[in-house]
Image 1 (cartoon, one colour):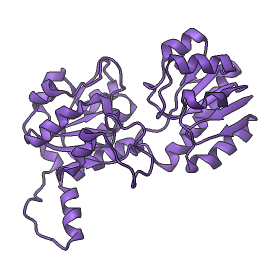
Image 2 (image 1 turned 90 degrees about the horizontal axis):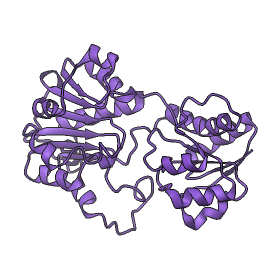
Image 3 (image 1 turned 30 degrees about the horizontal axis):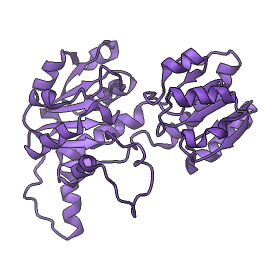
Length: 327
């Protein structure tokens, strides 16, 4: 079996070579993002594994199928970049990755604390020897209500992490999780908006969750609300976030996922002109902490993502059980 691996980072190469050897596959690696411009790379390939920077739309999938691709794995948990309807119609087996939720959950709580304790401003001041305390007074987690939107593996792990802080926890999801019920209380969306001091997002990006945090949602929130997004950028409406920060309706933002980040994150753009005005306008504010979609990025998660990427294709091709199969 021949597998083409797109978007391979330097830290993935050794793990990927080891996995290919273990599963007995011929592996071709490239750092390129999948597109119609490099579609010829898939000729004679049985399976493709990729990350999430390229949009795997119908036109691309159809061309891959013509070239012989029958299996696709994304080395990410999110799969909104793949046209699953088209893949299923063509007969391309698709799976995603799985890794422990701890890394993202830990990062989420870190962003909460950085926002609550004004860390960004303290860091900047320290660079110019300004050690004054004015404007740096923070809040304690134990006195706050945290709203968790999305109570899958990551959302529940965030709740476990927060349980030691003594905060009140509310949660919202279309499907209730018994583990979440042990740690917090399920409420409707508006109640969560009205009562939460911190709102953290852990939902997949679907038609029903696109811009779930928009102007109308923010208007229902407490003044000074802290919003954390370590999931998908498109869960939030960027212009609404900008307005919320400018009017001080939003007290702080912790953003690891940003709307329109494709083609920007995970690359060095120090000498480039970046044109996404709203996206990069936000980072100037003292109460906005932005990181480059790195909450997942730990040694353990990287190993798991790569191994899932190779194993998933092999399992689907051999008719074996693939726990992360999507279609």
